[in-house]
Length: 306
Ligand SMILES: C[S@@+](CC[C@H](N)C(=O)[O-])C[C@H]1O[C@@H](n2cnc3c(N)ncnc32)[C@H](O)[C@@H]1O
Image (cartoon, rainbow, N blue to C red; front, side):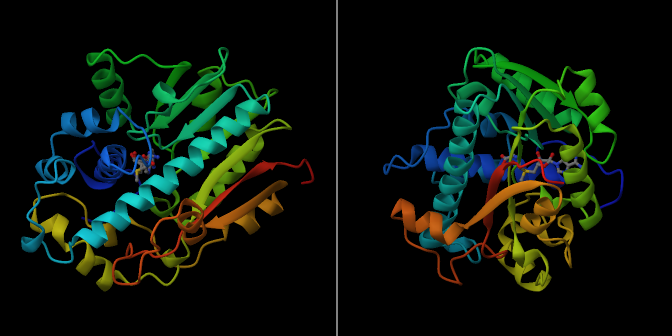
């Protein structure tokens, strides 16, 4: 399946299925006896989506011998990768709100349950933006199991290629107050110019004191579609609608740290390898690694010098 400028999806198809895939990773990291993270909503959400492959993956019922390129070491590397990523962005939000920010925007929120599980200060508003079917599914499923947001949660069901800033302001975002922004697992699904536009819009909506967190995947620039197809072949073989090679936008794009720096943000990057090291986890080898390789996690604040 190829991308188009107005494609859409639910949580079992296309880019939407990647949200279910990463939530399955969080569910597995939550169940892991090493106590890596605690996202109690990931598992019920993935079960409700109902993709058999991810349910079996969470339940440890996949026949790894029958799946090309799957082995316990690779699965463990995937779980550990989700754990360090989740912790990095959890810590980012805790630090931003400790610094006084009370408005949060989670772009491409997918099955992210932070609005239901982080210890937000009492007057925090969390805005979530994703495609309509994705937003609706998470809201309904979590209400169905009696989950309650731990902040005021406001949803903006819209495509991020449409005029989301107007929709966000319409939902109540106060552009005179600082905002903590998150774009996790999103940028590779946007064309390079859309990535720049996203950061331009974020900057235009950000008052002094705002913070931002995201990640940069250098492997998207010299992207090896054949290797990615080979390593994600197991999805296709098991009826999952994820062909990573056709979902991402490869090729040259601005480095996020440089681009944000040019817009007045003071951000720093830390490699996933460094986060594995800090957490005392085994660093993936090239053959157990994600086909997109290293990830640089980025966070910082608006310095005001534009
Ligand atoms: C890999 S998932 C990440 C979800 C979530 N941030 C997380 O880390 O669990 C990618 C998400 O990006 C969303 N997404 C990608 N392109 C989008 C677009 N143009 N408009 C709205 N959402 C988009 C998808 O719907 C999906 O939820």
